[in-house]
Amino acid sequence: MTRFPSGVGSDDWHRELDRLELVSRFHETARNLFDEGPHLVSTPDLPWGDAVREASVEAYRRFVHGETWITGGGAREMEAEIVRWMGRLLGAEEPAGFVTSGGSESNMCAILTARQLSGRRTGSVVYPDNGHYSLPKLCAMFGLDPVPVPAPAEGLHLVDPAAIEAAIRPDTIAIIATAGTWAYGSIDPIEAMSEIALRRGLYLHVDGAFGGYILPFLERSGYDPGIPPWDFRLPGVCSISADLHKNGMAPPPAGTLFFRDASLLAAAKEICPPNGTMSGTRGTGPIAGAWTMVKLLGEPGYTAVSLASMAMRDELAEGVAKIDGLRVHPGSRINMSLIHSDTLDLRPAADELRARGWMFAARVVPAPVGIVVVPMPHNHGQIPHFLDDLRDAVRLAVPLTGDAAEAERESVSSYGF
Image (cartoon, rainbow, N blue to C red; front, top):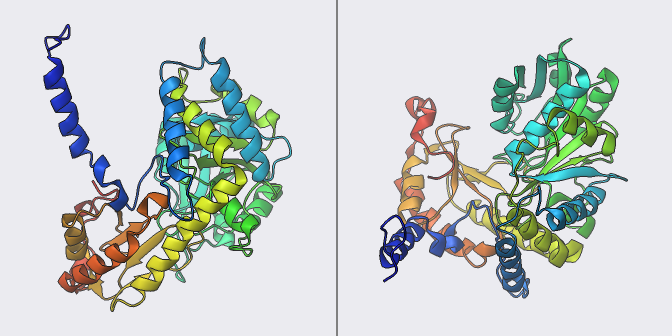
C-alpha cells in the first residue's frame, strides 16, 4: 500500500473518498430534481447525451491544471467563443463578457459595472423582492442600499412596473430584473422596465441565471412563441447573467455575464481589473467544460435539451393538477415548478419525499412550504415515480392553520440540504 507524505495510506484515502461520494449522493442523480452540473443523459430524444456529457467532463479534466493567467491562452479563446455565440442569440450585435463562477458573481460584476458608470461610490439598487438572494448580499458588500419592491396582491410571481419606477430615488444607480425567477419560473415585465431605465438614465441588468440557457431555444423552436422580449433586443438592457451550470448543462462552477457591447465590459474591467471578474485567478477547467457543451450542442442540441426538460415539466404539472389539495404556482415560462397548497401544510409531505430519496428545493413563500423542482435530462423517466410518491406523501399533510402559515422560515431547508 502506498503511503502519502502526510502518513495517510492509499487504501484509507480511497475508502474515505468512497464514503464521501456516497454522502454526496452522486449515485442517485436521477432522483435529484434540483441539480447543478452536467445533466445530460442519453434518451430516445437525446441519444447523444452521454457522449456530450463525457466529452465535457474530459475537457474539464484536461484543463483542470490551468488558470487564465499564464496557461490561459486556450481557455481565453474558449471564453470568447462562448460569449460571441450566446451573446448574439441573446440579441447583442457585438456582445462582450466573460465566464464567471455562477449567478452570484455575475450579478455582482454587473452591479459593480453600474456603480462604476454612475460615478458614485454609494447609491441604491431597485429590484423586485422575489429577486435572487445575491442582490441584497451584493448591496451589503458594495455599500449600496437595496430597494426591494413587493409583489402586487394579484400574485407573488408578478411585478408592477409602476411600483418599480416609484421606488427609484435620486441616488438609484441600477434596476435589476429576472428572467426565470426563483421559484416561480416567471419573467419580469422587462420590456416596461427597459423603458423605465432608458427614460430615467439607469443601468438595467437582467438576472437570467435559470432562464438564460433555455428561453432563447424555447422561443426560437416555436415551443413558446409568446415569450415576452427580455434580452438585448430591448434597448435598455445593459447586461444579462446566465448560468451554464444550470440549463447550460456544464460542470460547475460556470456562469456567464454578457454585456451589450465592449464599452460596458471596459467599465467592468476598470472596477474589477484585469478581466472584469471578481476572481483574479480563474481555473480553466470550468471554461473548457462549458465550451465543450456549447461547441458540441449548438442551437440544435440546446433546443432538444430544452424541449426534453419542458416535456417533463409539463408532465409534472399535469400530474400535480390531479392530486387533491395541490397546485403548481402559475407564471412559469421555464422548466421550474413550485408545488404548493392553499389548504394543506406540506411540511410532513416534504419530509416524506426526502425520506424516500427525492432531492428537491423548498420555498417558504407562500408559507409554510412549497416544493420546487427543476426537471432536466438526467431526470428522464422519473416524473411518474415522483408523482406516485408525492400522491402518497400528501396523505401525511395536515390542514393549514394560521400557526403553520406563520411558521419560522428557517424550519425548512431552502435548497434541500
